[in-house]
Image 1 (cartoon, rainbow, N blue to C red):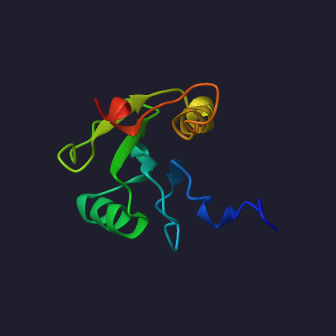
Image 2: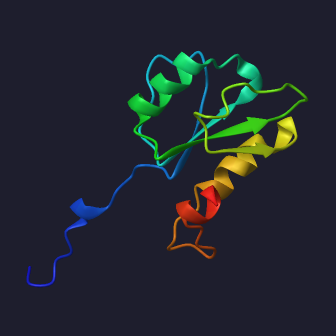
Length: 108
């Protein structure tokens, strides 16, 4: 077909993904989100960043726990436990959607 569009260029990698400490494997994402209170330590975060190939990590703080690995992550978002999925969904919005969120804007 002369005007057949090849969909092989479509990248299904999510912009943001919520990782859990108990996961066996880490799917790829641009923004690696994790809940701080799930006992992430420095080694686990380094492994997460490497295996997920995330450009940066964002910690989701759902309680008053202090986090000591601030040099590994690029940001912290404070939210209520019931809002975690909404935060990840917001970070996962494609530039083709109604609101384009650039990864660099989130980091800044």
